[in-house]
Length: 472
Image (cartoon, rainbow, N blue to C red; front, top):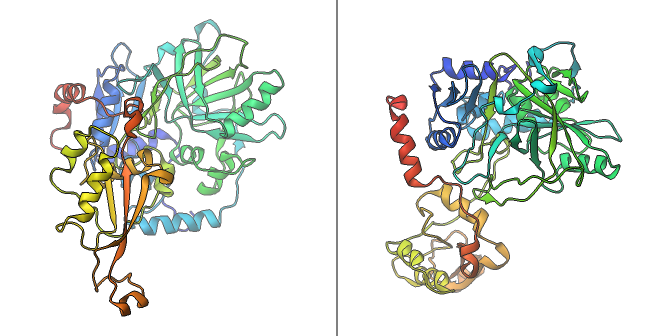
């Protein structure tokens, strides 16, 4: 085992078994796929010690088609998934991860003839994706999403290397999917190569795989390098793969479930509506028609576990990529607010009022002293919660026109940032940055809807299932 590396999990269900052994699993039966699973996931993901949720006997479906959510939504479980020592500090974990990446040597996957994924192979007339309890995750999603914590497997038609990418996948009907791809994503670049030839792009959607392999699929692995080889280097052993029966693509042998298909070029069949979907930005991405994916096979293990990793507004990012590569914001000074600030923003009646509020803070005797940063947020942001403020900074602040510097403000001789020249001259003033992390006033009505579940729906689901979480 490599230095700094803890035990690896060969598949998703082994990780779930570990969560159960550690007392970090809640099993639920009879939950509705239509929103209830998503709301329970959101509710428990927002708790610092929220458990893994394992759903069985989903409403309208038989036992044995399971869904697991909140797999990596605590620091401890995220560290376990990445093979990092859970007792180490976050900084030490990041140091160990950087050392591992610097010494990483790619290990290509190893093809095997058989694997658990091939226990059930369904093609032809028997193929029906509606046999799977695919959830509608967010309150305003435009449909059911099979792919949230998934991997899309494609092969470059020119160079032959295999790419794994994490994308969103919407269920259209029993034999049709949509895969939404942002421009510049490797999967999209490979798809375009096939389409330029007038050919469909073979693809496989993997839903439930060993944690480290899934993590690799959402890391920024360079073009031309397969995430299979990258994950093999991280785990110190090759990932075992089996050939897909209809695409020939290498599929993880221990995966829970896979759907093979062809991403059809535009115009071959009518586009299908895709979205809206609650995205990782914390807002709904609008609906836009997409070329369909014609499904050719469904493969799964006995009693498969569908990995559900919907984007959520929670303190720990839903994907493992952010755990090993966090967005660090160093905050110098004080986050300052005062009673009435939320009221003033809520009652905003005209453009410029947010700046007026900030200037009042900058000029008030009670708040101005050595204040270097003022962040103004909307009424839906709790200014005492850094997670919410950080979200507003990253999604509502355009640095080019939302940050303003005011000079010659009230400072102090004890300010460690005073230059020797200013200190000698007795000039203790400093500048203050005013950051308007608000929805733009002139088009705030068009700003995307946040993915938070409405209070009434959240409370209804909580009351229904509260007893299953008592004592935690």
